[in-house]
Length: 239
Image (cartoon, rainbow, N blue to C red):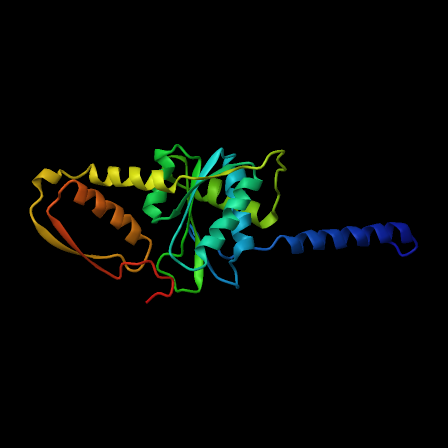
Protein backbone atom coordinates (compact mmCIF):
# COMPACT_ATOMS: atom_id res chain seq x y z
CA UNK A 1 0.00 0.00 0.00
CA UNK A 2 1.44 3.39 -1.01
CA UNK A 3 2.09 5.98 1.67
CA UNK A 4 0.15 8.67 -0.29
CA UNK A 5 -3.07 6.69 0.20
CA UNK A 6 -3.58 7.21 3.96
CA UNK A 7 -7.21 6.01 3.91
CA UNK A 8 -6.26 2.72 2.22
CA UNK A 9 -3.28 2.33 4.55
CA UNK A 10 -5.46 2.87 7.61
CA UNK A 11 -7.99 0.34 6.34
CA UNK A 12 -5.22 -2.15 5.63
CA UNK A 13 -3.74 -1.78 9.12
CA UNK A 14 -7.16 -2.27 10.71
CA UNK A 15 -7.62 -5.48 8.71
CA UNK A 16 -4.22 -6.78 9.85
CA UNK A 17 -5.08 -5.93 13.46
CA UNK A 18 -8.44 -7.73 13.20
CA UNK A 19 -6.85 -10.84 11.72
CA UNK A 20 -4.26 -10.89 14.48
CA UNK A 21 -6.98 -10.43 17.10
CA UNK A 22 -9.01 -13.34 15.69
CA UNK A 23 -5.89 -15.50 15.56
CA UNK A 24 -5.10 -14.68 19.18
CA UNK A 25 -8.65 -15.62 20.19
CA UNK A 26 -8.26 -19.10 18.69
CA UNK A 27 -6.12 -20.79 21.33
CA UNK A 28 -4.80 -24.28 20.60
CA UNK A 29 -6.18 -26.75 23.12
CA UNK A 30 -3.17 -28.92 23.94
CA UNK A 31 -5.29 -31.06 26.28
CA UNK A 32 -6.57 -32.97 23.23
CA UNK A 33 -4.45 -36.11 23.06
CA UNK A 34 -4.54 -39.11 20.71
CA UNK A 35 -8.13 -40.16 21.43
CA UNK A 36 -9.33 -38.32 24.54
CA UNK A 37 -8.82 -35.15 26.57
CA UNK A 38 -6.17 -35.00 29.29
CA UNK A 39 -4.77 -31.82 30.80
CA UNK A 40 -2.93 -30.40 33.78
CA UNK A 41 -5.26 -28.34 35.94
CA UNK A 42 -4.56 -24.62 35.74
CA UNK A 43 -2.09 -25.16 32.91
CA UNK A 44 -3.97 -26.41 29.86
CA UNK A 45 -7.26 -27.62 31.33
CA UNK A 46 -9.89 -25.97 33.53
CA UNK A 47 -13.64 -25.34 33.80
CA UNK A 48 -13.62 -22.83 30.93
CA UNK A 49 -12.05 -25.41 28.61
CA UNK A 50 -14.50 -28.08 29.81
CA UNK A 51 -17.39 -25.72 28.98
CA UNK A 52 -16.06 -25.20 25.44
CA UNK A 53 -15.60 -28.92 24.85
CA UNK A 54 -19.06 -29.76 26.21
CA UNK A 55 -20.63 -27.18 23.95
CA UNK A 56 -18.57 -28.35 20.97
CA UNK A 57 -19.61 -31.98 21.48
CA UNK A 58 -23.29 -31.01 21.66
CA UNK A 59 -23.08 -28.77 18.59
CA UNK A 60 -21.04 -31.25 16.54
CA UNK A 61 -23.53 -34.07 17.06
CA UNK A 62 -26.56 -31.74 17.04
CA UNK A 63 -27.41 -33.70 20.15
CA UNK A 64 -30.81 -34.01 21.73
CA UNK A 65 -29.34 -35.45 24.92
CA UNK A 66 -25.89 -36.29 26.30
CA UNK A 67 -24.97 -38.52 29.25
CA UNK A 68 -22.54 -36.98 31.76
CA UNK A 69 -20.69 -38.80 34.56
CA UNK A 70 -17.61 -38.02 36.63
CA UNK A 71 -14.95 -39.79 38.68
CA UNK A 72 -13.88 -39.30 42.31
CA UNK A 73 -11.32 -36.53 41.73
CA UNK A 74 -11.90 -33.38 43.75
CA UNK A 75 -12.18 -31.21 40.63
CA UNK A 76 -14.50 -33.52 38.70
CA UNK A 77 -17.88 -32.20 39.97
CA UNK A 78 -16.92 -28.61 39.07
CA UNK A 79 -15.68 -29.66 35.64
CA UNK A 80 -18.83 -31.72 35.10
CA UNK A 81 -20.96 -28.68 35.96
CA UNK A 82 -19.06 -26.56 33.42
CA UNK A 83 -19.42 -29.26 30.77
CA UNK A 84 -23.16 -29.44 31.45
CA UNK A 85 -23.48 -25.65 31.02
CA UNK A 86 -21.77 -25.89 27.66
CA UNK A 87 -24.10 -28.65 26.54
CA UNK A 88 -27.20 -26.75 27.67
CA UNK A 89 -26.01 -23.53 25.98
CA UNK A 90 -25.81 -25.52 22.75
CA UNK A 91 -29.52 -26.33 23.17
CA UNK A 92 -28.96 -29.97 24.17
CA UNK A 93 -30.22 -31.76 27.28
CA UNK A 94 -28.01 -33.38 29.91
CA UNK A 95 -28.68 -36.81 31.40
CA UNK A 96 -26.62 -36.70 34.58
CA UNK A 97 -25.47 -39.97 36.16
CA UNK A 98 -23.28 -38.37 38.83
CA UNK A 99 -20.33 -40.22 40.37
CA UNK A 100 -19.87 -43.27 38.15
CA UNK A 101 -17.25 -45.31 36.37
CA UNK A 102 -16.52 -44.75 32.70
CA UNK A 103 -18.04 -48.14 31.92
CA UNK A 104 -21.35 -46.98 33.42
CA UNK A 105 -21.34 -43.94 31.15
CA UNK A 106 -20.63 -46.12 28.10
CA UNK A 107 -23.52 -48.42 29.04
CA UNK A 108 -25.94 -45.57 29.78
CA UNK A 109 -25.39 -43.92 26.38
CA UNK A 110 -26.74 -47.00 24.63
CA UNK A 111 -29.33 -47.95 27.25
CA UNK A 112 -30.93 -44.48 27.23
CA UNK A 113 -30.45 -43.80 23.50
CA UNK A 114 -28.29 -40.74 24.09
CA UNK A 115 -26.57 -38.92 21.23
CA UNK A 116 -23.22 -38.91 23.05
CA UNK A 117 -21.59 -39.43 26.42
CA UNK A 118 -18.85 -37.69 28.41
CA UNK A 119 -17.02 -38.92 31.50
CA UNK A 120 -14.99 -36.41 33.49
CA UNK A 121 -11.86 -38.41 34.39
CA UNK A 122 -8.11 -38.51 34.04
CA UNK A 123 -7.92 -42.28 34.64
CA UNK A 124 -4.45 -43.19 35.92
CA UNK A 125 -2.97 -39.69 35.63
CA UNK A 126 -1.67 -37.83 38.73
CA UNK A 127 -3.92 -35.86 41.07
CA UNK A 128 -3.25 -32.52 39.35
CA UNK A 129 -4.73 -33.73 36.04
CA UNK A 130 -8.24 -34.19 34.73
CA UNK A 131 -9.94 -34.65 31.39
CA UNK A 132 -12.81 -36.12 29.39
CA UNK A 133 -13.62 -39.39 27.68
CA UNK A 134 -16.15 -38.95 24.88
CA UNK A 135 -18.25 -41.42 22.90
CA UNK A 136 -21.02 -40.93 20.38
CA UNK A 137 -24.40 -42.67 19.96
CA UNK A 138 -24.36 -46.40 20.46
CA UNK A 139 -21.34 -45.88 22.75
CA UNK A 140 -19.15 -45.84 19.65
CA UNK A 141 -15.66 -44.32 19.78
CA UNK A 142 -15.19 -41.03 17.96
CA UNK A 143 -13.80 -41.01 14.45
CA UNK A 144 -10.52 -39.12 14.70
CA UNK A 145 -10.96 -36.76 11.74
CA UNK A 146 -14.72 -36.48 11.40
CA UNK A 147 -15.48 -36.26 15.13
CA UNK A 148 -12.53 -35.74 17.48
CA UNK A 149 -10.62 -33.18 15.43
CA UNK A 150 -13.86 -31.43 14.42
CA UNK A 151 -14.82 -31.08 18.10
CA UNK A 152 -11.32 -29.78 18.90
CA UNK A 153 -11.57 -27.16 16.16
CA UNK A 154 -15.00 -26.03 17.34
CA UNK A 155 -13.80 -25.72 20.92
CA UNK A 156 -10.69 -23.81 19.88
CA UNK A 157 -12.46 -21.33 17.60
CA UNK A 158 -15.69 -21.12 19.63
CA UNK A 159 -17.73 -20.85 16.44
CA UNK A 160 -21.01 -21.41 18.23
CA UNK A 161 -24.44 -21.66 16.68
CA UNK A 162 -26.73 -19.46 18.75
CA UNK A 163 -29.82 -21.27 20.03
CA UNK A 164 -33.16 -19.79 20.95
CA UNK A 165 -33.62 -22.30 23.78
CA UNK A 166 -31.33 -23.64 26.49
CA UNK A 167 -31.15 -27.33 27.28
CA UNK A 168 -32.17 -28.87 30.60
CA UNK A 169 -30.42 -31.13 33.12
CA UNK A 170 -32.07 -34.34 34.29
CA UNK A 171 -30.63 -36.37 37.17
CA UNK A 172 -31.05 -40.03 36.22
CA UNK A 173 -28.34 -41.36 38.56
CA UNK A 174 -30.61 -43.56 40.69
CA UNK A 175 -32.40 -45.07 37.70
CA UNK A 176 -29.11 -45.68 35.90
CA UNK A 177 -27.48 -47.35 38.90
CA UNK A 178 -30.44 -49.68 39.41
CA UNK A 179 -30.58 -50.72 35.76
CA UNK A 180 -26.79 -51.05 35.55
CA UNK A 181 -26.75 -53.45 38.52
CA UNK A 182 -29.51 -55.49 36.91
CA UNK A 183 -27.51 -55.68 33.69
CA UNK A 184 -24.30 -56.74 35.44
CA UNK A 185 -26.08 -59.45 37.42
CA UNK A 186 -27.89 -60.69 34.32
CA UNK A 187 -24.65 -62.48 33.41
CA UNK A 188 -24.78 -64.45 36.66
CA UNK A 189 -26.78 -67.53 37.65
CA UNK A 190 -26.78 -66.96 41.39
CA UNK A 191 -28.32 -70.37 42.09
CA UNK A 192 -25.01 -71.97 41.06
CA UNK A 193 -22.91 -69.88 43.45
CA UNK A 194 -20.91 -71.60 46.18
CA UNK A 195 -19.96 -69.92 49.47
CA UNK A 196 -17.07 -67.57 48.86
CA UNK A 197 -15.16 -64.91 50.75
CA UNK A 198 -14.06 -62.23 48.28
CA UNK A 199 -11.69 -59.28 48.76
CA UNK A 200 -12.82 -56.22 46.79
CA UNK A 201 -10.44 -53.30 46.20
CA UNK A 202 -12.18 -50.28 44.67
CA UNK A 203 -9.03 -48.16 44.72
CA UNK A 204 -10.79 -45.31 46.56
CA UNK A 205 -12.45 -44.47 43.25
CA UNK A 206 -15.92 -44.34 41.72
CA UNK A 207 -16.29 -48.12 41.76
CA UNK A 208 -17.04 -48.29 45.49
CA UNK A 209 -20.67 -47.05 45.46
CA UNK A 210 -21.42 -49.09 42.34
CA UNK A 211 -20.09 -52.24 43.95
CA UNK A 212 -22.16 -51.55 47.07
CA UNK A 213 -25.29 -51.50 44.90
CA UNK A 214 -24.26 -54.82 43.33
CA UNK A 215 -23.51 -56.36 46.74
CA UNK A 216 -26.86 -55.20 48.13
CA UNK A 217 -28.70 -56.87 45.27
CA UNK A 218 -26.69 -60.08 45.72
CA UNK A 219 -27.61 -60.07 49.42
CA UNK A 220 -31.26 -59.65 48.51
CA UNK A 221 -30.89 -62.73 46.30
CA UNK A 222 -29.36 -64.66 49.25
CA UNK A 223 -26.12 -65.22 47.35
CA UNK A 224 -23.65 -67.07 49.69
CA UNK A 225 -20.95 -64.43 49.32
CA UNK A 226 -18.96 -62.51 51.91
CA UNK A 227 -17.14 -59.38 50.76
CA UNK A 228 -14.12 -57.82 52.43
CA UNK A 229 -13.79 -54.23 51.24
CA UNK A 230 -10.41 -52.46 51.12
CA UNK A 231 -9.65 -48.93 49.88
CA UNK A 232 -13.36 -48.73 49.35
CA UNK A 233 -14.60 -45.18 49.96
CA UNK A 234 -14.08 -42.63 47.14
CA UNK A 235 -11.19 -40.41 48.23
CA UNK A 236 -9.89 -37.55 46.08
CA UNK A 237 -6.61 -37.35 48.05
CA UNK A 238 -5.29 -40.51 46.33
CA UNK A 239 -4.40 -42.31 49.61
